[in-house]
Each structure stands twice: as C-alpha cells, then as structure tokens.
Length: 253
View (cartoon, rainbow, N blue to C red):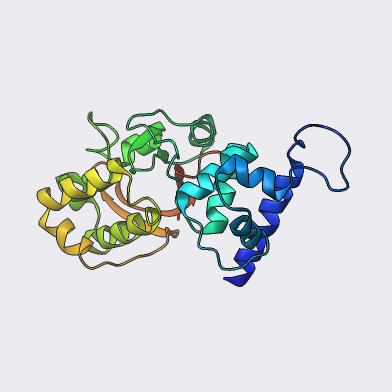
C-alpha cells in the first residue's frame, strides 16, 4: 500500500512539472508550482504536498477529478491516476447499452479456423463465424439479445447439448462474477443478473453461492444434435483496445 502511495505521489509530481508554467519566464524548476496547481484544483497546498510525498492523504474521487482537470490529463493518464488512488472516477463516461464489436474482435473472429465468437461486457455475442453458429443451436442462430448467460440457463438446447451442464453453468456464473468485479455500478450487467435471478431458479441458487473464478481454458464437450459427440479446447483473449470485450475460440481437442 505504501508503494502505491509513493507511485501516486511520483505520478502527480511528474504531471505537475509537465504543465506549462503560469506567466511565462524562466524558473529553476519546470512546470507549475504546488501553490499554482492547488489553486487551479481548489485544494490546499498542504494536502497536495502530502499526496506528492506519498503520505496518507485519503484523496476523495471528486478531489482527484479536480486535480485531473487542472493537470489536463489524457483519458489514459486520468484512468491511471484513479487506479493508483484506488478510487472510481465519478466522471467516467458510461458505456452504451448497445454497441457493435470493435474491429479487433471482428478480425480475430473472422480469422479463427474453428468456432469463434465475440462477447461484450454483458456477455452478449456481438459477432461470430459460421462454425460457431452451427455449434450453438438456439443461441447464435436465433434472434434477440444472444446473451450467453441467458442461453445457458433459459434455452433447452443448452441443457440438452452439454453433458456436464450443471458444472459448466456454475463455472460460467463464477467467471461472470469475476469478470464484473469492478463494474458493480454497470446497469446493463445488473439488469442481466436481476432478470436471470427471476427467470431461473438454478441461476439464483448458483449466483448466491458467491463463487468467483477466472475465465480459464480447457476441454468443452458437446452432444451435438447434428454432429454427435464433439470436444474442443477453449481459449479466450481480451483485446488491448477494448478489455471489456473478449474473443472466445474453440479448437478441436
């Protein structure tokens, strides 16, 4: 924790020294003085000194937001500031409820040699290839939202096709909980969970178990209605430009 405070202090000082000095002229030190930044951000000079020195200062999200504006931080720099401080940005832009897949996800899905699909932050399929559409009857070949959790718990095709449905369903919930650990305020994800708790007794019981698990690969088996017994190794990638999305690929085992 002390190392994090020191990193926060070093980052703030570097950003302050990067800012153009007020009034022009030559100075012995670059950038803004602490007093000048404190006035810009509407905070005390003493408190800013404590932050830069890595002392316990307990910065509030709104004070950090004022500092970010006063320093003219970019979106990436602002996100890094709040990450170092362990706070949630109160002015972070909300994510839209409906959006298409980013180009990076579409390209990876198109290039996949086997079944592949892209998921958004609520685990709705945003793109898929023909092999994935054939593999998942009742999901990718159907209309509607195409949410993976809804498919798993509400579609009879999923239960009929997955010989280990109960274990797969429990794992899926644990992975979804881990995936959204930092997005409790996301209304879209909250709506998916609330709807499924009402619609599925199995989902409600498994969700209440509070199990958390990272999304891991492994063998996925299917008793497919047309192609018989199938087994795939599953791999998941997160694109660097959109870490809230993911690409899932299945390779014959």
